[in-house]
Length: 295
Ligand code: HH2
Image (tube, rainbow, N blue to C red):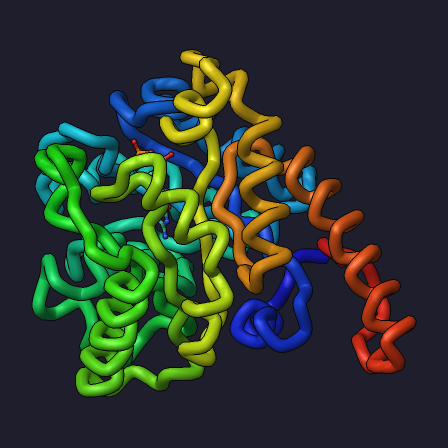
């Protein structure tokens, strides 16, 4: 059984790994663009990922890949209409990947429970208030600049410190809009205005972000930095690198993983968690709830 929203919101304490499957209803996403643009294929893919152990399906209708152009709220809703309600009706826990309040409201009406905003409430001033009043959970992600230009020479003096400060500010903004801090999740935004060295520093130092006291989500899945390290140009063949990044981030304190290769990552995290539990048992701190990752 997939995790409840409460289990997701306490995953940083219990260390239960939460897996979110990516479903892009877009013609142009960097990895699966076009593949699930057909509504029947999209619904089938969502159900397949749940069968593979995904706790949540994150549905998006606007690609945020580097260089991508904006998609209007009405076009996002048009793309989501034949898919998202069907997925939610099948009993799947749905997260909506959008920066627009209008799109998020449509998704919540159709049964979504979580809002995943890659702009952390900066794109649409109404999104945080909507999340505060209606969403069970809200993901706030760091991005330097915007998708169109974010990979043009991103610069940081101290990427981990700056991302942490940004996320702390956005948590404060969400609270100011009425959201409960305990319903918020933070995400360093792997690949969003970051060079290889920045992505690695963030994955290696998730602990500093976990210090904010809310669950940390990471989305390294199939991204370009894996290609830069491995030389693999085809995103479909980056599952190994995606798994490695998730495991490293889990070890450093992340508990929510946004991925394409659900079965592989669920299995990897279940093993990592079992090893981690064995370590805490030996250390005499074995007070963890029983059960493996994913149920
Ligand atoms: N990455 C992407 C989209 N949404 N949300 C969060 N919270 N974290 C991420 O790292 C993240 C995200 C980009 O990946 P994808 O959806 O596969 O591609 P595209 O943006 O091209 O649709």
